[in-house]
Image: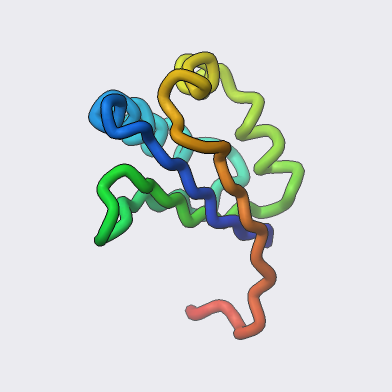
Length: 99
């Protein structure tokens, strides 16, 4: 399993537009081969900060996701929408998976 936390920070003036674009990625991403879970959050103290908690079957599955056509409307506008670069933090699970 390959786990990441992705943090995306909007410019205040583009927050709503970015939130809509990010939310639109959830359903198609969850349907992708290799996606275990893809959970979309907003920071409880800063509404411009969005966080994705993602589990993939492998790094290759994540790489395939990042090349998907449904991400292009988002990727083509990142410079305009974001306050800073996207942060992607890979994680290594220390506990056993539940279930």
